[in-house]
Image 1 (spheres, rainbow, N blue to C red):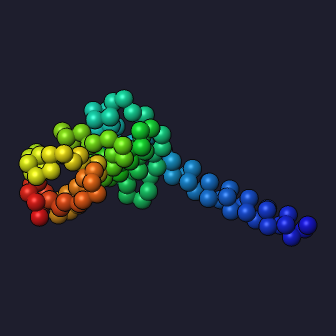
Image 2: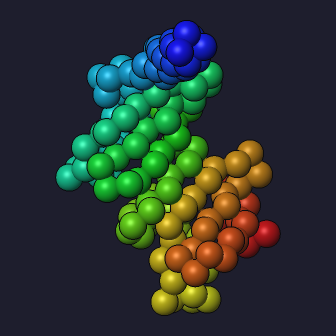
Image 3: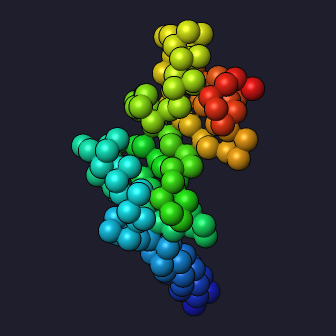
Length: 138
């Protein structure tokens, strides 16, 4: 009986510590960089932030429709994952939109990641395409 109580107490302490670490990284929407907030208002005006956290050099933001975004410290969007909907095309560089409209007109873009060398796009069928910073296929 005493051992079970000790184990429960230890588990409770671990959960409390993890919760404190997670909560410590949580930030309010007002604490996001201005350009990140403007991006969210422009492209996701009807969505609500359900969670925003700072993780080292990035802000991780979740919206109520399941969309996940990663912003750098000055508010540039480095990753956008629209789990249930297509990414708004005006976020995507025009060269990428043109290529995908021509080659994959029936597929929607659900994830875009900005890399130093360009962009990685994931389509609704699970395929992944790599493009350079100018929007040309790699």
